[in-house]
Amino acid sequence: MDEQAEASRLKRGMGIADARAMYPSIEIIEAEPAADLRLLESLADWCDRYTPLVALDGVDGLFLDISGCAHLFGGEKALLDDLLARLFQQGFDARAGLASTAGAAWAAARFSSGSGILPEGQEKRFMEPLPLSALRLDPGVRAGLESVGLRSVGSIMAASRAPLVRRFGAVLLVRLDQALGRIEEAISPRLPVASLSVERHFAEPIVLIEDIERLVLMLSAGLKRDLERRGEGARTLELCLFRVDGAVSRVAVSASMPIREPRLIGKLFHERLAALETSIEVGYGFDLVRLSAFSTTLFETEQGDLTGETASNDEDIALFADRVRARLGRNTLLKPMLVESHLPERAASLLPFDEMRPKRVEPSRSDRKNLPASCNSFPERPLRLFIRPEPIHVPMTEVPEGAPPHFHWRRALHRVARAEGPERIAPEWWRQENNAETRDYFRVEDSNGHRYWLYREGLYGVPGSNPPRWYMQGFSA
Image 1 (cartoon, helix red, strand yellow):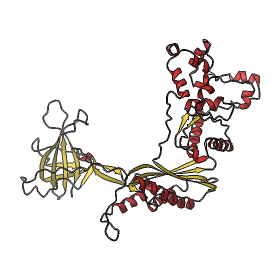
Image 2 (cartoon, helix red, strand yellow; image 1 turned 135 degrees about the horizontal axis):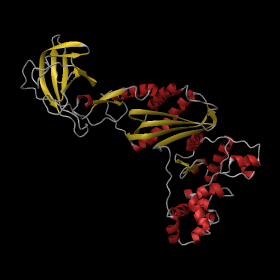
Image 3 (tube, helix red, strand yellow; image 1 turned 45 degrees about the vertical axis):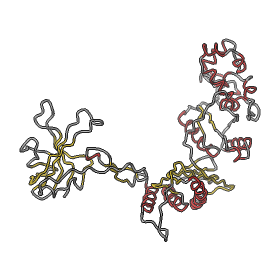
Image 4 (tube, one colour; image 1 turned 120 degrees about the vertical axis):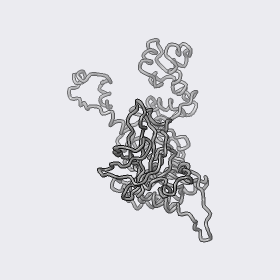
């Protein structure tokens, strides 16, 4: 209900027929809880201009922890006035309360008749005359308390605590102690808090992407000083653009190696802004721009020669990859990394370029000293491995444990001229299904000189087991 409906003595829970009987011209609009939640979340994003610690409170409220932030706006009252004025300009009817505890601030926003600012230590005096709903209690608990004559917060304070807990549960006293500051109530922010942030306010909003890019260089210089003081470099950076009308645009970039030079940071955001130029709605412009470092790591410097150059070109490669991914997406460039696994198709995986490099895994090498000279010409592993092994048809084998004399693969017949094996690879029992079977690998060369890596899954002649299946794992030439 809006203010006019409340002034007309309409109440929540009243039927539509009763409301129309009282006021035939009343306007009724179907509720959209999902849209209301999206609106509240957008307001929470906008409130990030005052503090990074913003949490949702039900379906119509927000909690802002402004500890250590009020002085940036000229004090607590100035911050509160600026917040309410901006919300009013955006068309919202908002009330705010400020106190040293979240519970008292919640009550001040809804029941205070003054400025809504409670001096520290005055929570008890303010809460005493308020109704029970100021303690954020469930309707059932409130009804039970009112049925025994406890209708105000002061009556709860004066009553014995033990009987209240036995009859109404511990939540009642927890809410009371939270409001009075006896129990700490933490606010869980809905967004992660940045390690370092630098921002710039504007009297006149900016609307050009070129101005934003120049501003990124200026903010990066301030961020660099903080990173140098901590001996760190940034891995994940986010640019927040606060629009005049309350909308917030967030542009994030990631780096493969820790960076802190404004020139490098500017290049990454140049590529990202170029990719998002059509999707960023400038509107009437941005009056606040913030650059934040969400992920930082130790910055390790490399000794260079007299010209300042280093032997390693990892930084140049990383910068190139970061710029490509900033323009085309994080998963545009992937890097293969060795993985500890017995199965060949799992021995390597493709990871995003900016992920931390896992511990290096050296590939195992079998002892080939006692193999015949004719077999030493075969490579230990093929040049190409299939992501998923392809099935092949083997009509027969000379011996149960031997290589096939010929096989069909991709509608072609291949006659085996030479073969080496078997090389047995047991299943990974700690991660495989219970029906996983042993693999016997063979290196074969057909009559045309092409070399393949085949394997047989399962064994011949095992009672109660399925017939063995043959697969192509990869090929060399």
